[in-house]
Structures are given as C-alpha cells and as structure tokens.
Amino acid sequence: MVLEKNCRVLPKIAATENLLKEYLAKELDITPKSIHAIHILKRSIDARQRMVFVNLQIRIFIDEKPKEERVFLPTYKDVSQAKKQVIVVGAGPGGLFAALRLIELGIKPIVVERGKDISERKKDIALISTSHKVDADSNYCFGEGGAGAFSDGKLYTRSKKRGNVDKILQVLCYHGASHSILIDAHPHIGTDKLPSVIKNMRETILSYGGEVYFETRMDDLLIQHNQVKGVVTNTGQTFLGNVLLATGHSARDVYRLLQHKEVAIEAKGIAVGVRLEHPQALIDQLQYHSKDGRGEYLPAAEYSYVTQVADRGVYSFCMCPGGFVVPSASAPNQVVVNGMSPSSRGSVWANAGMVVEIRPEDLPQYAEYKEFSVMRFQEDMENLAYVNGGSKQTAPAQRMTDYVRKKVSYDLPASSYTPGIVSSPLHFWLPEQINERLREGFKTFGRWSNGFLTPDAILLGVETRTSSPIRILRDRETCEHVSIKGLYPCGEGAGYAGGIVSAAIDGEKCAESVLMQF
Figure 1 (tube, helix red, strand yellow):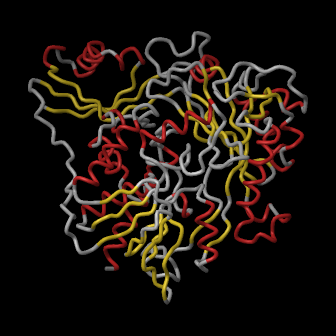
Figure 2 (cartoon, rainbow, N blue to C red):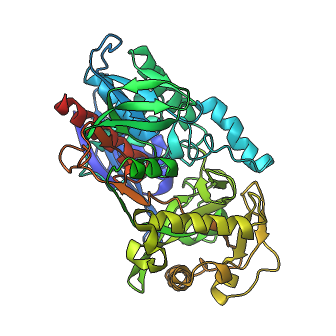
C-alpha cells in the first residue's frame, strides 16, 4: 500500500529517517518494520511560533517496495541541420532556457554572449576583489549564466501563473542540480554548484546542434522595414534570423542601441537601497526564537520583511543566509553590492538587500532623460557609492543603528565583502527619499523582531540592480515587440522577469512564441 500524508514534526524527526519512521508508524498504528520506504515530496519550515516545526508532504510505502520512479528526460531534438534558427542574445537563465526550449521545438539556437564561459569568468570576478579591476564584459552581471550564476542560485518565485515552475526545476536537476530543489519550499542550488549546472546546459545546447559564441557582443541590430533581420557583433560576425533578446538587467548599452534604432522602450520602476549584513548566529536566534540558534537540525535561518513607508514599499530582497556580500559593478567607476550563498550556507554572515521602491514619477529631476530617467538615477547612485567608497571597489558602509540615528560610524565590524569596506555616512549622501523610508523601515522591522536593529549589523552601499530600469515593449500574447517584427524581448533585462526561475519561464515562453511566428 502507498499512502501520501502531510505531517508537522520537530526538526530532529524530520532530519532522522528512523525517528520519522517511528513517528509515522505510531500515527498509522502500524509497526515501523512495515514501512519499507519514505519519500519526501515537499518540505518547509514553520518558525512562526516559539516552537519550530517542519512541514512535510510524504509518500509512505507500507508492506511494499517503491517502484523505480520515472526520471524527467527532456525531449531534445538534433537541430544541427534545422532550417529554422533563432539568434539568442545572452546566456543567462532567460537565454539558456530559451535555447533549450528551441531545441525541443526543432529550432536551432545561435547563442551569442558578450562575456566569457563560466570557468574563465571566475578569473575576472576574482580580480574585482584582488585588484579592484572590473571587466565591462565579464563580471558578476555579464558572462555565461548571467547575473544569477554567481549570486546564489535561489529558485524561489511567486511567478507560478506565468508557466511551469516544476519543468524549470526538473531541467536544472537533469543538468546536475540537487533533487532537493524539487522538495524544498525555498529551493537553492548554491553559488558553488550552479556553475557546473550552467556548463552542462551549454554542453546540451552544443550536443544537439545549437551554437554558442562567447566574448561575442551584439553591437548592432539589423532592422529593415520594421523587421529584424539579425545582429552584428563586435567580432565582425553577422548572424541572420529572428532575435530573442535576453541581455539581462545591466546591459545599458543595449538599451541605448534600442533607442538609437527607434525600438520602443519605456522607463520602469526599480528598488534601490543597501545590502544589510548581520551575524548569521543572531538571525538564527531571532528567527528560531532561541538563544541557542538553529541547533543541529535546522538550516541557516532566513528572513523576509516588507512594509509601506510614505506610499512606497520598503522590503528585504535576495536574502542570503550563511552567505557573502559581493561586488556587482559592470563597469569602472561604479560600486554595486549584491549577495550570494554557497550550497552549504555555511558562512558566519547573513545578508539581504534592503530596498525602497522607486517609480519614474518619483524622479522629476531626471525627467529630461525620458526613457532613461530611472537608469540615469541608478547610474548616479552607483557613481556616488564609488566616490564615497574611496574610488575603488571598496564599499561605503555604516552600522545599522548609526544610520538610523544619522551618526558617523567610527569603526565597523568585520564583513564578508572581500574588496573591503570603509566608513561612510550613507545617511548624508543617499537621497532623502530613500533614507527616510529605510530608517522607518528598519525601526518597524526592529519592532517586529527585537534585536534585528543592532549595531552589530552594517549597511553596504549601494544595492541598485534589483531589476531592469527599462521595459522593452512587447505584445502580451505573442511576446513579439510591439512594432518590430522578429524581435522577442525576454527575461529580466526586458522588464518581464525577476530572478532565475521567472527569467527561465519567460525564456521558454518566448521560444514557444517564436515557433508560432515562423
């Protein structure tokens, strides 16, 4: 007999197979020996009350052994000789999943990526910390895998209405991700594991006849009579075909090219603020309601906060338990911070973006820049952080309590940010529309969780790459640009996704739309 059951158990029971078997046997009034196997289908932590529980959805095999479960196998086709081809610009999650879906549909993808492959990209990323050198085409934002490759690999999304989330997770598992991502409520691959998954995805594209070109930046978009004909790259190569544009939220040169080519775009709201770093042990104590922290059976604790201050959202973003703050500038003379965690989530720090909602109408002083108003504001914030951080990749920083009290921090606690931090009065040089909302937000979060607002936490500036400051206009149903035929704006950089999974879903959606237009 096979039963499926939902149960709520203590962390020790959830983590120990024998204890879980004993618990279930008692619940079902059977002997533990009659339970031949337990398969966990879904798992989440409930830490809302003083006593922490783990919610499990499980499949129990009673007096029978489990049958071999069918493993998801994508139906990829050999497209090496396919007559239909699509140029996929960008090898982030949107571009990679679009390419794989095109192969499933029998269409040959030609992937052009401005950055380097995942292995070479690591070397350039290391130079940001050691030499404060930012390669404009190979950094935390650009290169194989996109911005998500070295910023955690979190797979939680609220975009379930947009497409098949399970399909995206299964494709990642097929390419080497842990099957735990199919189980956990907040799935996470880890920055140390994700590069090999991305490399395997590239190998799949190549093995089925697709093409991938690195260090190949799109420098021009060929358009005739409002119809895309292809792209011209910095290598001198021209690739002809419909174009699926998945260049990510930091490709500012692409936005400027589109404006020059009279491709319709518009300013889009973003969120701007800081990266907040706490000792992970403190977050464990607060979230698990115990002075002993997470103990032996619980993972590094996460948090999520959101409030409204003066009609704008103030919220935590991209929370990284047991993680590190990383330098995410994509050009010289910028300082941008982001967060990531390894699969173990084993560092002594916890960090999250703490950001304020910014809409185009909030920036009247940038109105002259029209479609680029929010992007220009974003650039100015990054330039300010660079200057106030010492004109290197060192980040301007301030103790959390000093920021709220508008005081200079005369010393700073240790930080995970490897390029280094310098004391800076963020409360003075950040715009007041951000400062006043962040201060009130921090006070609110401190009331909700006593101890969260602490001098042991520091703010690092600035967190600006929360989403694209531009939306490339497309038809809601066909995903084709509203006026340029054959152009398919895709993913986070086009303003239609936020994060790995939603970008991947959008990539698949755009690939399917391309097929309909052939």
